[in-house]
Image (cartoon, rainbow, N blue to C red):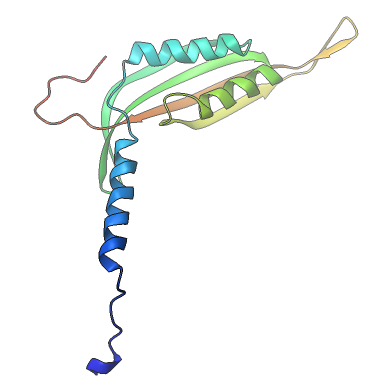
Length: 147
């Protein structure tokens, strides 16, 4: 029976070290908690750059969340945005690919209505976005979360 047990790969220690390094790099990619006002201002700036009017409706304070046995701090907000479809698409793309990299669009609803004005067809749209920003949890000895 001992002869049937496979031998360990020669580079097992190196594989373990590589996996641990990758894990630590992934953990460090999450930022410390960010300033909520700065996050909202960045979202409004991105909307303005895309020619979209955005209004943050509901925000929730930073709160803890456990995902796959890992703790994170999460800031959630709801945003409505209106403009033409191209502007909304640009705004959403900038949100998904911009800073912070841990911003997630959890829900997106878009309503569109076609209007004909002066012989041109415009496509005004309104969107509602549910956004979450993930960060490292605060250490238990630190005071309050950044607001």
